[in-house]
Every structure is written in C-alpha cells, then in structure tokens.
Length: 443
Image 1 (tube, rainbow, N blue to C red):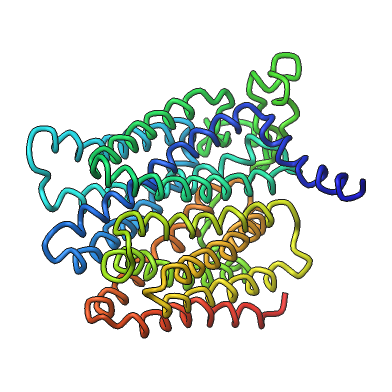
Image 2: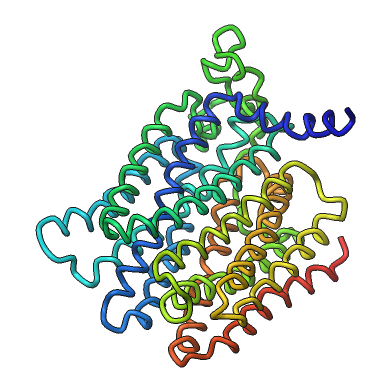
C-alpha cells in the first residue's frame, strides 16, 4: 500500500501537468515534430553517405547540422522574450518544414543536388534553438510551479521517446521508400506542430511596462504585475487551466544584462561548461555511429537506426526515473555522478564490430545523460529570473548545443584513418574530466 501511495504521488505531477490543456497541446505537437526530426537525421546522413567520399562529407553534414545553432540561438532569445511564443514557434515550424520538403519536391522533378542535404541541415540548425529555448521558456506560463519538474521531465521524455521511435522507423522507411519519403514525413510533422502552437489559448508573451513614458506621466514602481489574460478568469477558463500562477508573476523593469547575470552565477557556469564538454563527446558520437553502421556493423541503415534508438531508449528510461524523484545527493554531485557513468559508456565503442556491446554502450550513454538534463534544467529554472527565461535558456542551450561541431571536427580525421580506438578514448576523457571537476566543487 505504501509503495502504491508513493508511486501515485510521484505520478501525480505528470497527471496535473497533462491536465493543462494548453501545455498538453503544445507538448504533443512538439513530440510529433521530434519524431520526424529523429527520422530526418538518419535520412540526411544516409543521403550523404551514398555520395562519393561520403565518410569525409559526413563530418561536414554534422557541422552544418549543429554549427548554425550558435547564430540562431543568439537571435532566438530576444525574439522569444519580445513576441508571443506561440507565433514564434509556428513560424519556425513553417520555415523548417519547407526546408525539409524541398528535397522530396526536387526529387520528383529530377536529381537532388549533392549540396542540398547540407543546406537543409544548415537551415535546421539555424532555427533549432527556437523550440529548444521556446518550449521550456513557455512552461512557467502554462504549468503551476509545483508541477514544473514534471513538465520538464515530460519534455525530456518526449525527446527520448521520439528519438527512439524516429531513428528506428527512419531506418526501415529508408530501406523501403528512400530518404526523400522520410523528409516528406518530417515536413508534415512540422505543419502539425505549427497548428498545435497556434491553438494554444493562453498568450505566451511577457507583459512589460513601456520603457518610454509620456511627459508629466506619474512614475510608477519599477516592479509591475502582468495583467491576467482574459481566459485566466476562474469563471471562464476551461477545467484544469485555472490558477496558473505565472499570470500574476512580478516582472522587473527593465530586464537587462542577461549574460552578465548568468555569468555571475557560479553554479550555472559550472554546469554549462560540463554540459558543453559532454556535448563535444556527443558530437563525436554522432559521426562515429553512422561510420560504424557503414564500415563495422551488420545491417547498414537499420544498424544506424538501432544505435540511435538504443541511445534514445536509454534517455527514455533515465528521464522517467529522474522526473519521478529528486536526487538524494546535492544537485551538482548528482549531475556529476551520472555524467561520469555516461562517459564510461563511450568505451563500449572499443568492442566493435560486436553490435550488441556497442548498442549497450549507446544505451548507457543515453540512460545516464537524461538525468543530467532534467536535474540541471530544474536547477536553471530556479536560478534564472522569470523575465530572462527566454534569453537565459537561449544563451545556455545555445552554448551547449553549439559544441558538437567541435567533436565532429575532431573525430572525422580519426575515423577516416580508421583509428576507432583513439577516438573512443578521446570521447571518454572529454566527457569524464569536466564531470570530475564538477564533482569536486563545493556547493
């Protein structure tokens, strides 16, 4: 009975978060879009691998897929804080969906130019930070504070589940219908996400007082409260949508110095640097996985789909556990501990061409990297001021997402020379050393 009560208590946060209609709609639309993205990465990599000298070009694809994130992230934060996040997410979906649809459309009338997958990957990377920063920045406006940990876990679960389904399904569809059909599905998934964003009822925009006052205006206090949206009234709001605290959240004027505010926070800086290092190792893995499927493992595109699915399955399991319970250790120690275990998973690459052990390594990396994301995101939401969430999440996630190209650049010449062993050791050290430093910090 006690076990059931505890389990019910842990799941209650998930139920309450999903009972919020606007959060549920946005989360489901995002999840469908992520399934398409998981399939698309397999399709783009296989299209490039099919080109002459495809192994060397694969590193360039990964750079195109990830490097523009840095530029796009710098622009996404101010846009998300200035405009309604519903409209920003919808525009992003239309643009990236059109980019994905361009390849299957061109294939219907002729041969796809060799450079086109790289252009599509670059467009994807440029706009990628919009949902990565926009969705968590919208959570406090859609979900009460007590359920935000569950909402963060649901975001991670959608990444993991869609990542597990998308690559595996993409590998099967590529073998049967070709990569162009997979990209057409992703374009459709973007259209569905745009519709979902536009059907969210609550405005997702920070209300700020005017920065310039008319002459002789009475000067008001520098802290104002955002007015309640019309549908926020308990008498008119649908069941499960009432009493969302952020509508009355205090907003300082003005919200400046976002980057300096974050840089002064020692905990935010330390965790961000550790995540940046881990993502360098992940960037190396994103190149190594397709290389292994092409040159070392049996199964071709299906093997690649299985590798990425194993990574996502581990993330799914790790996120489910991490979202249901708070770590007993201090946050920094807990984050560092799981990062060290995830780093050890890279050593499984040394066992290639044994597919089962390589799959196990991908599973371990995913399983222990997911709690890092959830616990660190809860930590950031508690430490980033509310008016800075759009820019704060954009800055931090941009820094973390912009580092995989470094790993891709490091590992490509090693794999081209057939040096899998040194590549695996470099991945392990890059992921483990910063975690050990984080573990030694006092907080």
